[in-house]
Amino acid sequence: MTATVATTTTATAYELLLIGGGAGVGKTTVGWEASALLREASTAHCLIEGDFMDQIHPAPADDPHRTAITERNIASVWSNYAALGQHRLIYTNTVSILEEPMVSRAMGGGGKVRATRVLLTAEETTVRQRLGRREIGSQLSAHIERSLHMARHLEETAPVGTVRIPTDGRSVQDIAAQVLQAAAWQGATETIS
Image (cartoon, rainbow, N blue to C red; front, side):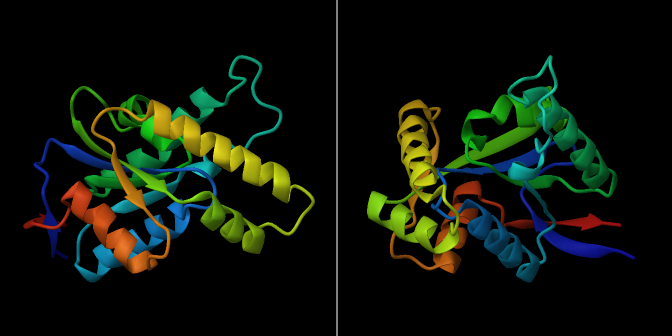
């Protein structure tokens, strides 16, 4: 069976959309909504939630930050998607905008990956409200402080060319549409068998 889908890639290139930001900015929600918008437009893509790529305890002795296991897991999942003819990957993770080299290597590297880095942002009040609704355990205060610290770190260390998108007071659909516009993923067509 052949399906026609929108694309901006060539047969030898992969497209990577990295969505990052501190906890409470909406990375996962926006990633899922971007995926829904792409499905509606019949645009072929896949999605990996990066938070699940390093969930091992204890960390391997030779990989204390779990970077190597993350890369291996992404490579394994991506190889399955690529074998089905996929060219686009949405990858969400707090620090994903800093992990472009690692995720690109996992996708095959060698100049075959065109990446778009999107840093979602939110004001402190918004982060506190969102995390307050989501976190019900004893670690809320610590979680908020880690999120605010990470947001500052990402703002200071974001690579040149990173697109910043504020999420305060906006609908998820609007944010996801802006993320997809930054990646320029809606365009020509390709056939996937």
